Image 1 (cartoon, helix red, strand yellow):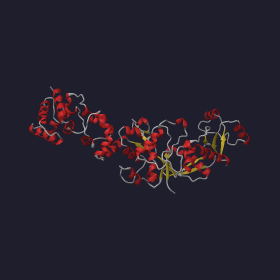
Image 2 (cartoon, one colour):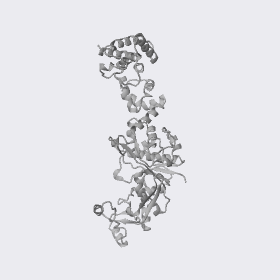
Image 3 (cartoon, helix red, strand yellow):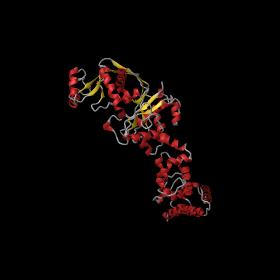
Image 4 (cartoon, helix red, strand yellow):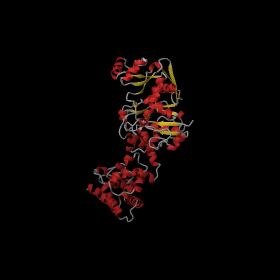
Length: 481
């Protein structure tokens, strides 16, 4: 049988890291076995729908490289792929169960259910309408009394299912309540629509978070009621976040950015995010950590998914992001960095090749770039004390003389480039019998107005150009007067 997985998000907001990992693992399970990855939009919970959320789903999957084989936007033989467009198909299945004595119409009012909930906290529905006489049911229907359709759950025995990650799990049937299949508005419940859609779409593997483990018996009892084959379940471990006190709890917004778009906005590369998320629960047999999406498809195996919760570590993600940036050539790096260059230079001209040379090995996140290079567009205000550096042996007494000599030597350069600048400054250090750093430090401070810069004095002066460099060096000298 061909492997078929589905990603079935509800369009209720942004794409959380946990949702994205589910989509990724479903994609990897399908692609590692030459299967199909299906996108289905589950929009039956009308109250929680968020405008524009469907576009977020499409954009996230596209940006992440998780291309679906079937879905609302591209079609397929198992469509439609939006639950609200499949609405008419669910009721006949529920009515089939009623005819077979496996489900029933429940006419209980909202007030009765609320009172029942108050009196029997955590006890679930009491089965009040489970065995209503036929005449009573017909009378209520003729009067137009609203109703839901509930499944008759077994009251004795137990239900056992097998999960690819957590193994065999058994739940006592006495803990189950008669679940609603069709709501009073005619829409199916999430659980019911899920089962009908998965079966009719030929889904072979159901992948979801371990928080749904307790719901799985409800799904299986539906499959059994219809006599359908039960799919392979793959429940994923929790993703935790680090708290300020060192403890961990389920990942949430208080731990930082937890949505794919948020992480991209913070300067992380989509491919680095995907690579990192793949390792949140999956433990490859090798020590390899950097994987392309194609390599993930080749190496991913369900039996390597861990039961233990994984911790989302922003430091590890930052390390991985930096590794991806360092592996890029100039063209690729520039394509990602360009928006940040333009933000820093605010319309002024810049040399992307020279910026690549100083940023390529030093950038951790793309969002770091503007603050790293903003001094090229405009010299910041800085304190004369910045010229003092113990390691470079510069003081407020010797820096004026050094800067004056630097200006004089650099003024004589005809061909302004990094080689000529470096030769000039190193030659000056020899002439003045100073260490290289003693000459370079004041030149860098005057040119950049910062103590921490990508690149040293030579690279900065080269990028600024001769005219602007000399202007800034003279300004620095005037600060020391």
